[in-house]
Length: 354
Image (cartoon, rainbow, N blue to C red; front, side):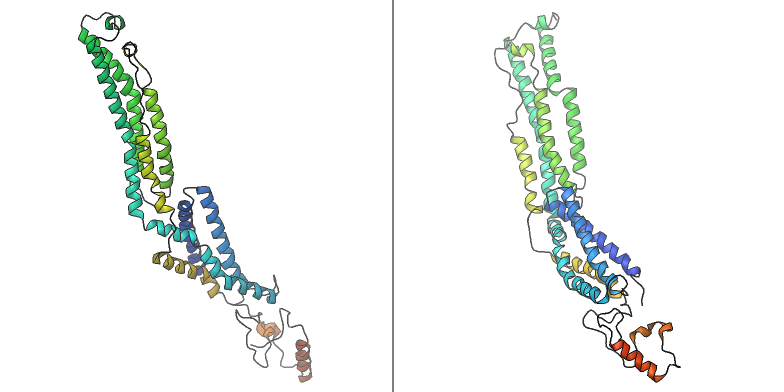
């Protein structure tokens, strides 16, 4: 009784409920904002702080003795918080409901994500085809003798076949040599890591989507740079050498697949039954400390109405030192009762009976 904001085991469940709601809110807000984690964090913080204030303050006001705030004012504030807390709670459920809507499309999102990631490797397959075609074209030019003298380029080797083989190998090394192999290994390693058990529970899935889009453009520029060097023998063939260019076909294809994910995690849908059930559980846990909190004995109010009085006993008799002595004369008792009845009814310690 009369213990202000008593901490109990109910608060443990309340804090767990707040953590759970905060986690789902952050996930839902992250998908809602298309991976803007800063905005998602701000939304989550506002929701958590708002609900803690609404429910914990209501418990504090229920247990107050009137020292901090007049009892009449505190009950008005308490009633306002309790009667509006369902509305505030429902308004804060948007991110949670949105996450469960996204969760219902988990299989489609994971499948599309893997498809888009794997499609991005096509840029390397396409480049290798370009390198092969360019090498074959160069070999054809060498065979037709349309290039400059190979002996002047390679130290006067006696065998023409050896000269041509050396020139083709030099072109191959420039196009698909060590630098290319390192680039492809790095890309493959990144793709394998991104493909390891992707799930909508991992909010950094959105970060990986943005990263692969940026990486595709980066890889393309590096491949174009690798195809830039042209051998003197190629220049002497009398025909222009085309540099690598995927015409944005591979990149647009992979990016188009990844962009389809937005139709799943940005779409607004009605709340799922599982989300509604979870929300009801969280609401009850948030309200639990208020329900367990005993109202202070000095308060004449209830959540609805006032307490009923019992004739012959003042509410001020809750403390043993305040009990009326048996030696008091009837006239003194009558005087005390008349004095109590003349006090302002709005006072925290107005006379009433239990």
